[in-house]
Length: 148
Image 1 (cartoon, helix red, strand yellow):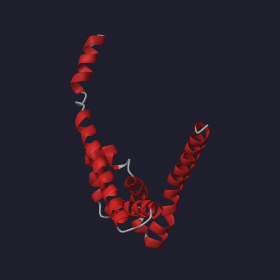
Image 2: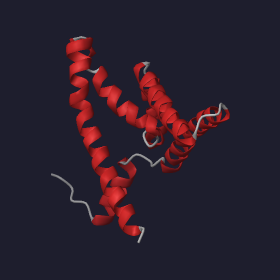
Image 3: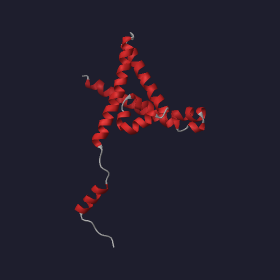
Image 4: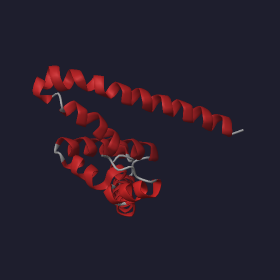
């Protein structure tokens, strides 16, 4: 016959069986790794600025370099390990965008580079791009309205 637990007994049972929260450790890792990714981006930006590029060119080149590095490290399976370690700290910067595009596309590699990766990458990238563009339009409208 099954024993019926009281509310207090049930709460105690759940607390014993639940995994202990590692929130402080996870937040620290996310903060440090996300911050380091941003520091790398800032170093690239400063290096380009010292080379005499205009601010607009520096911004564009820095973004392209960071997206390239995110895609490269995803292809080398380094970014996935970083994501396991840092959690959200690895997906917040622009490199997380590159990872979200390249990682699913790599799953189709077995179908070949043209019909697998090449054809399916746009299926995967489509929703990411649509969401990003939609959010940027909404934020732009809000910014425009709040200027007055």
